[in-house]
Image (cartoon, rainbow, N blue to C red; front, side, top):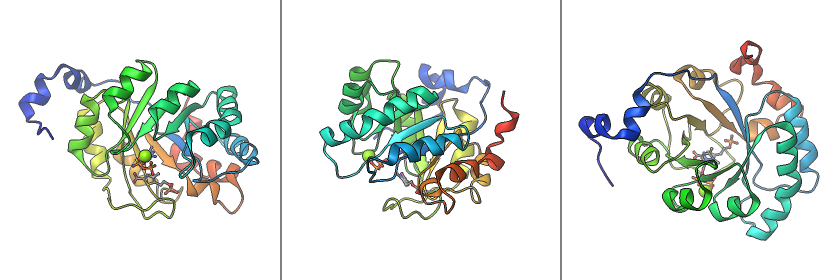
Amino acid sequence: MTDFTDEELALDPHFADQFEQGFRPACQLYLISPPTIDETFVDALAAAFDGGKVAAFQLRLKGLDEEAIAQAAAPLQKLCADRDVAFIINDSAALAHRLGADGVHLGQGDGDPKAARRLLGPKVQIGITCHDSRHMAMEAGEAGADYVAFGAFYPTTTKETTHQADPSILGWWTTLFELPCVAIGGINADNAAPLVAAGADFLAVSGAVWNHPEGPKAGVAAFAAVLDWENEG
Ligand SMILES: Cc1ncc(COP(=O)(O)OP(=O)(O)O)c(N)n1
Ligand SMILES: Cc1nc(C(=O)O)sc1CCOP(=O)(O)O
Ligand SMILES: [Mg+2]
């Protein structure tokens, strides 16, 4: 992997653009599906959207083949379009392309982001998992990612994680780059504030919404206090 010196960062035209100070929108919610769903899930997703502003929804169904995910996706993608929520497919640029999704999220083992960009074109969002690595994040930016994702910030039962991220990586990233950063891993309404304060552009959340004792609408609504929706306009 490449090591980036300060000189290279300053000279690279892509990164140089990122140094320009610009407007940074308030932190937003990026909802991740439960790892398994059934046909009633579309109602749960609609309820979640009723709870407050959701910027993006990622369909993350682990262990299903592409055909099954495509079938599950149809009503969810329509709902997202109706509610003006970006519809993101996890793991597969090919499936995102087939479905005409708004974006794809790729982990470090989910394929070459540059190949994904060639397939998907400039308008489809590409997000890249960067764990707790500044180096991976800079490589993702250089490869043309639309956002970088850091995590896991807190213990999570949704995914087995081997990397633990510190909020300071969000502050480092947002000080240097305009490219949005996503915080993920065990985030709930009670522990999210330090991530927002550190500069997260998006909070990616699964369990805190789907396992909320009062349901997904309350799960999303609980984030209103930290995400300050009432100040947006
Ligand atoms: C927004 C976001 N960030 C990170 C991940 C994790 O992606 P990956 O490392 O590929 O792990 P899986 O989700 O595929 O198990 C994500 N999905 N979304
Ligand atoms: C999908 C995923 N990726 C992670 C990472 O660290 O890259 S943590 C995670 C699980 C997110 O779900 P929850 O909000 O329930 O913890
Ligand atoms: Mg993946």
